[in-house]
Length: 150
Image (tube, rainbow, N blue to C red):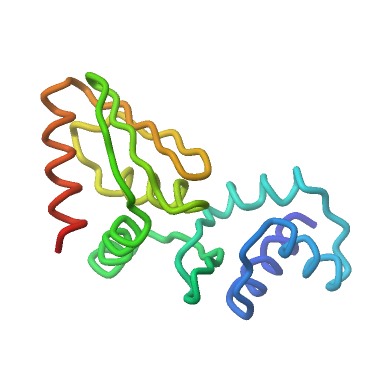
């Protein structure tokens, strides 16, 4: 059942620009799947779905896949498109993003595998990056600025 639902979700996000969990649930219900918001949320996490810009100020779910250099370009684009600002508090880097893009930008930062970053926690438009030291936080900020200003 879960595998079938996951296949349907991947098929739906490939065919439609789905922006919210509610939209995804509606498509699944139309397709005969009875789902709850908790199920959708868990499926999104398990499938490693994130949001990317879809145009016209909208976003859509996509599956993040690790595929070498091409995927690295995707991560760079997500970081650049979603980034708004950043500030530091010692070894904590706070990154502000476009509303709804924090998870995607956090996934992009994590995918960079920077040794300075221990990990990221994302909300809707804010990311908290745990960085190994205050000095490392400055290095990470420089790296992000270099990407965003390209």
